[in-house]
Length: 118
Image 1 (tube, rainbow, N blue to C red):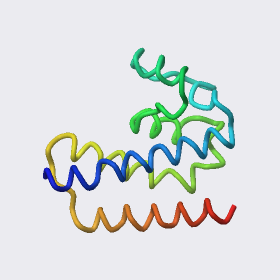
Image 2: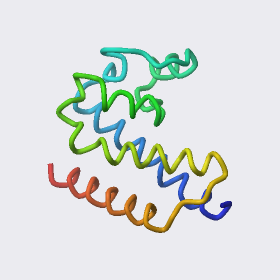
Image 3: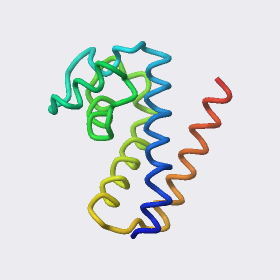
Image 4: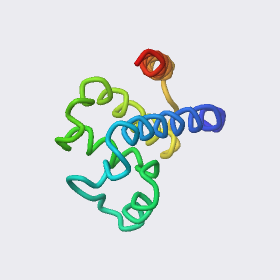
């Protein structure tokens, strides 16, 4: 578990940041708060200061419920869901299956390729 945490947590967090950067570039700094707010006031304050502070749970909620993100739902939803699930598994001291790790890497590679070819 410790080895996986050291390897995966930075990868997963960089993916979250890349997704937030993409949405910020496309929709502006206020994209995470256009239609709703996170439950946590700490996360709300952090997002007001920096849209890259959106955490996995709220990001998952937004991609599935925010009308402003509908154009990105098809391309980001499964990646966000996987990133969130793997981050939560590690945070709860569970190991990640090899298939899930490989799936994450494939989705990241596909995402990076699509960013490079916009």
